[in-house]
Image (cartoon, rainbow, N blue to C red; front, side, top):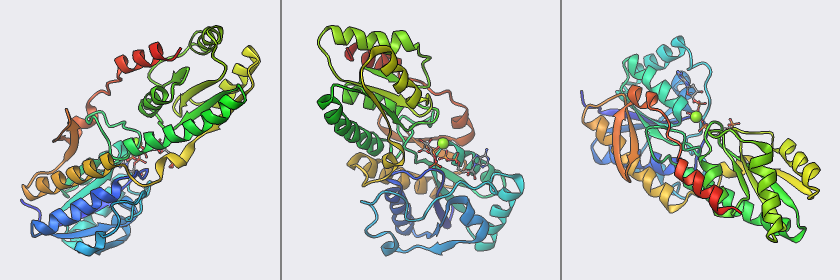
Length: 322
Ligand SMILES: Nc1ncnc2c1ncn2[C@@H]1O[C@H](COP(=O)(O)OP(=O)(O)O)[C@@H](O)[C@H]1O
Ligand SMILES: O=P(O)(O)OC[C@H]1O[C@](O)(COP(=O)(O)O)[C@@H](O)[C@@H]1O
Ligand SMILES: [Mg+2]
């Protein structure tokens, strides 16, 4: 059945570009003659009925803003069989026959369960981590990496002035993509990612010593959040090399800020595609990027796809940082 009255929500960690996705869903739905509702605070809004009708102007002036105008949440109540049934009942009560969920892997599991409870859902990947295995790209990733790069460039100015070593922790719970890319972009001497086991002596100390011999006097080590222990790593570097060292955890600064052009455009394409799917009577699909094209997969199959770590990019990062 083709959806006539749809809802859109943002869920999990916010990501720059989520607003562009919401705007695209709302305006596409209206141009297809559908009614569209905005759900606040992620799945929590479906449980409490925090739902409002959206018009063309409801999404004016948000495309350039970070965060999510619909707010977001991690909802423990929804993450139970009873919670999913309660949310499905609320959708039926409101006459909502399709939901676009903008979020990460956790949110997609929720979308799969809600579809199972009778409410057709479409997932749109919005997370800075780029950890959705079925998609080459997730909304917010480009902005977050550029923010991390700019912050580390600043750290480098002061690190260089003092001939120090800076250990910088970037976000990425189970995924080293932000670390790997920013590590290359800032010329880190070592980059630690959760996908590759590291040896402290070989992968950090020996690299620093070799570069010291060739005249290098300041060092940046990038550590993914999923590897952690950046304070300890920093202390050990200072103890073993005698180089004065400082640790910085970049944290949530990476999740905020105005989305880059890439995030705004990809979010617009993905939001549009999601509404096309609901218009065509599809459900339990996730919108993804494959080879720079926007396509879709079954959510359940997409969630089972293994993540592919870019070994070649990792090798490049190793060979260039000397
Ligand atoms: N296995 C699951 N089944 C149903 N709902 C889930 C599941 N995992 C997560 N969710 C819902 O999705 C929300 C967002 O997931 P989370 O993992 O926190 O963020 P993200 O979507 O960014 O990965 C959770 O708070 C929960 O309500
Ligand atoms: O803001 P919170 O809830 O502490 O979550 C932090 C986590 O969210 C992220 O920023 C994004 O992850 P999700 O997209 O899975 O929410 C991770 O990089 C980080 O580990
Ligand atoms: Mg996640």
